[in-house]
Amino acid sequence: MLHLQSESAKRWLAQVDQSLDEILIDHAHCERKAASTAMNLMNAYTDNRPLCVEMTRIVEEELEHFHMVLDVLDARGIPFRRLASGPYGRKLNQLVRPSEPLRAVDRLLVASLIEARSCERFRLLADHVRQRDSELADFYAGLFESEARHHTTYVQIAEHFQPRDCVRQRLDELSAQEAEIIAGGCDLPRMHS
Image 1 (tube, rainbow, N blue to C red):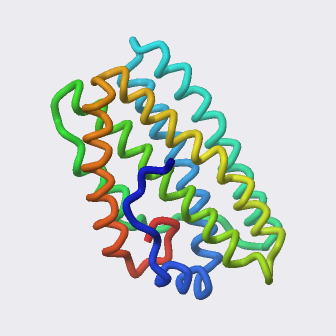
Image 2: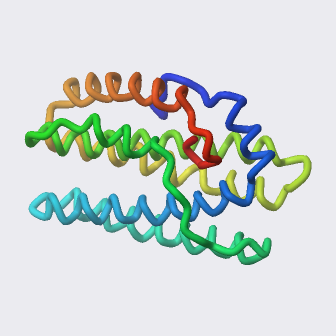
């Protein structure tokens, strides 16, 4: 369903245990960036009405999630602040081909893979903290469905730009590269480190 070719390493759960506050802050930034990505796609492909309709929905949901994470931070007394970004998103976006319509396909598929990895991480996080923090576990379990839906939406919209078999082949290629990027990890405790 999520088109991921790897599972997250236990190393990430160690980062969760050591730096949960920072991962929660990063999660808020991820939701803000996800809304921005959808808005940028809408701006780039304004003449594609189905894309604009779906991106509007995603922007609204991502901003809602952003505020929900801010509420979690507030409830825990964790101040929201700037964080240095990890390399995950930048490395994925470097894989985007420069010419249209391939650029549109890649931008949408990169967004889909980021959503898929978020979805996988939310499930892992929920399971990992369930025994000691059921409230946080429930929060992350509740986000799983919308992230999975966003992943699927991005893949379906990519099929407006190229035939389905071309999109699925490219998704497989990008997913393999995403697996290498996530396996490389990052020392910064981030949602996608």
